[in-house]
Length: 476
Image 1 (cartoon, rainbow, N blue to C red):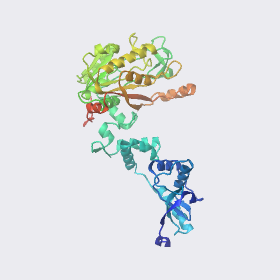
Image 2: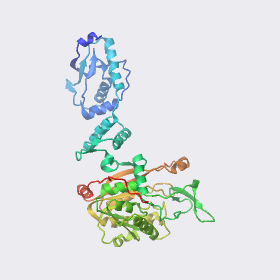
Image 3: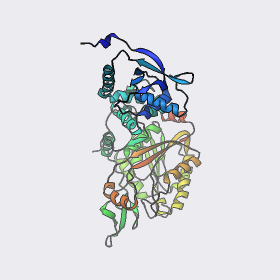
Image 4: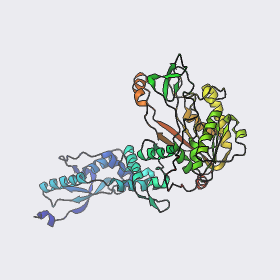
């Protein structure tokens, strides 16, 4: 049966902030900081429900206003000032008895408790805000990690495309969501990687069974304990090994996002076959430089077996790239350099992985400078790098050195993404590593994007991101 209260009505009033009394029986624990930040950004857009000056609904809003007033902040929009007092919009529920007001407060809180978010709809709203004004996200009340999780869900949902008025998931538009964190552990990423590997790519082929190293040196991401006295082969601490191979999905993303079909891709640190094969399969012309003739021969063998003709590898020292790549006018500079002496690829004295850190930087900077001179104006450069440690265990700063080298070559530091990689054998090594020296287990690489010229013209040159309509052809 309806209460007699249903025949009475709340009345709108504006009451002085200091005249309001917080309900001393309020059991609700709210985040006043979120409310305060919202008021600062958007103004006061609520009404407080009061009975006899006691706040039965809106206690945390009143607390936020009191904190703002005490801090000396000016009255926010929505709060009028009369004779120096902040006047708060209220709904007077004095038509309710005290017991009814208490029941109303409980019901009001319980209604919030029972609400359930539609995460897909919420993610779509957050995505639109992120595109139009990302600064607003900080005032929605969600933490950074919560926003990451919600926005990442867009990979699995259909959302409006505000750029072209089309619909589709971000993955359908861009292969992977174009966020600054790229997750190589995700199921979608691993599925696509398996498709690429099934085409016959073998980036590890062409390398010796063990890269050259010495006792205490890191190779393949595992510490080298020494060499076998009989065979001369490296012996790894904890029996771990495995080469560092370039991820074909990352290659696909970089090539598709930052170059157009028919573009020329220049790679001064070619290494294995991945970047060349992927670029050629995607309709680009690839030119890679590598010091080791056996690596180039293996890359050419793989490309030939796949029927690829638009990938070319040149044997030589990239410090002579102006001669080796004579006539090349690149639309994309895309590479993954040696990480100092983390992996030593040969005993050739010209090999940058076999020299001191100081010598490495001199050659590295020269190669970057000369390579950038072969890059057309209004184009992008993408370098995948990671940090390395010196003999004392401190980071050398390969990432900032790379950024400085490109900036000195006249390019702007335009984008940075973190590639989250597989844990792999790190899980077996991390206990000793962290216990003995508090070294965090490194499970990411830095994807650095640089811009030569104008961003809009460079984006126009990159063109539409074409996504495959069919699965990759598998080599039998």
